[in-house]
Length: 149
Image (cartoon, rainbow, N blue to C red; front, side, top):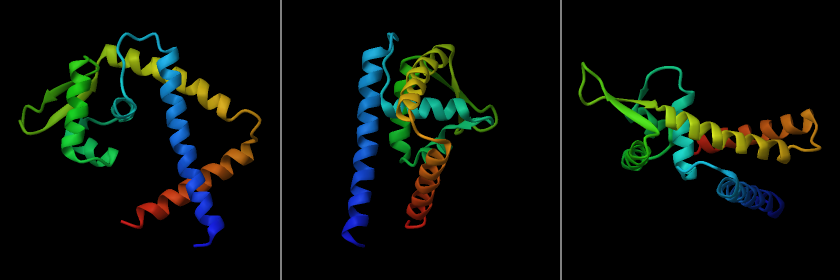
């Protein structure tokens, strides 16, 4: 890999870390929610809320790209904060379904509003074509990364 390409990947990594850092800081500054959640908790809560089908606990580990024990800790912490609820399958006691509670929905919407405002700021003065090119490039890099496994 040439030095220029290596520099691009380093810059892309730095950009992603900076975006997460700014997001965390903005959330800390702007959220009025008494319940605070981490970036990972937000990602899991958001993933559960987006699923149209029943959300099975063990599937979340694969979906989030994390091991089962890490997901279990995240689920436990969200459940302790009354943001999600686990429901045991009546036919298979080993299977737990996850549901977002009313509190979870409120907290999620609060965080999503702040995130949407940030995204609008990040996209300021970018054309649709520039955004689409960026998205296509990121998707291509993600696909290449997934094929490396």
